[in-house]
Image (cartoon, rainbow, N blue to C red; front, side, top):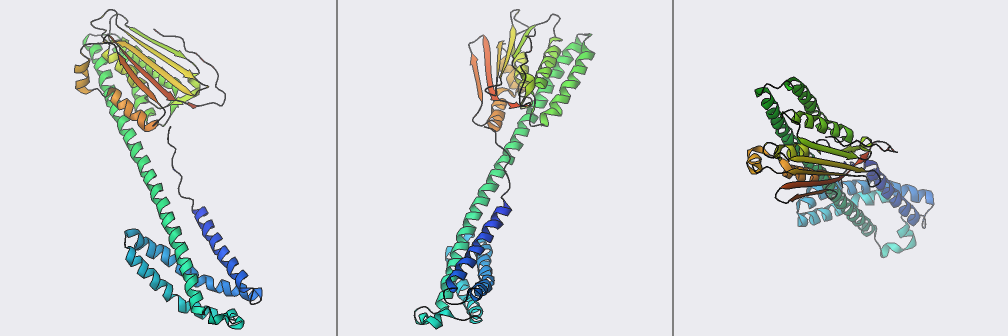
Length: 361
């Protein structure tokens, strides 16, 4: 399945969570102290404690957790956290002294001293802030790792496309060179066709998706250009069925396979040589099936050694673009070589109209 661009971490959600946490602390503190004093006094006492508690929370999360704990200094973090908890006790006691002490009035001071209460709440804030920051850092690292992987995959995909383009150009120029040597009157029109192909290869290949009909048009243009090499037309057939004008595909997806067939078919030595191309689009399944069949040239290995990118490049591109959602198989019976490609398509229109291209020869 094709990956989608990763969305950034939701800062609004993060801030909302923190705001909800402090509202929860405010609510709990107010409810607790309102048992021993008027709720207005309980509210302001709790509110006054939010400042030192927030300072404790964010210093622990942003400094101790990020700078000490996340770097593997576990003992150093524990000692630093204990020192931080104790350091904020005098400040908490001073803030609490500005309000009536419910523990003194109820006699609970003998059981639970103000300092002990401040230490307990400080410990709770440190533990919660540490847990939250560790989880937040983990999510952020995973997020960045996925982003990096996607960028690497996109860069690799662009590299594979870039490898195909000069490979394709090399073989096409060789065809035109052969025509020029023989003085073919079709050389000028071949150069024009090549310029149109180059526009597609150079500019459209940069796009993420192109209309399938455009890819087919350039296949036909390439086949016509290839035919100009020969005094008599060679047997190259293209059969197309399905709503090809209503779906999008990866650019330069089919053209390299066609170029590979034409390059390796034994037209020069075999009067019965042929290339058969079959393209079928299934709108209900959202799939494209492209099958190529060609007779073989015994010199294929030599041609591949010269500079073919071929099926290995195609498989690598498919693995990046459609990791678990493509089929690319080959069959070689000694005289005929077949390739089957099946990939998902993206719709252009909500309700595609059926359109069938006739077979071309």
